[in-house]
Length: 123
Image (cartoon, rainbow, N blue to C red):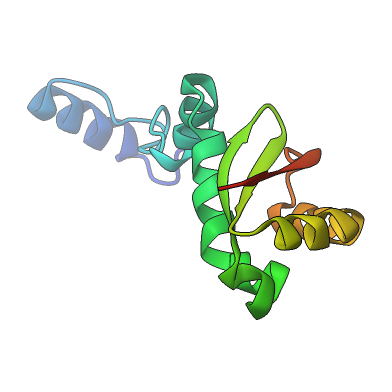
């Protein structure tokens, strides 16, 4: 760093002696925000599927439609398989018929490529 004034060196020396250390070069050096680590921690602990599952439950009515959402709900997401519980066998048949389009909507909403298939269970 080039001195702009002949007294700059003396000023830096006085500040260093008064503070007991030199001026930091960058006050933000080595400082990280927690948000930088949260996604990685969640992934390492294995909670990311649970978070995606909760998000899918929240938007299930928009994805499946009001009628289908009344008779079904996402219940788990494990290893890319989204399990959807249906209230009646006829609803299960209906969802199996629309499996491809429903999976495409879910994958677009999830936008992370984690959901690879759907499984329907009656109950």
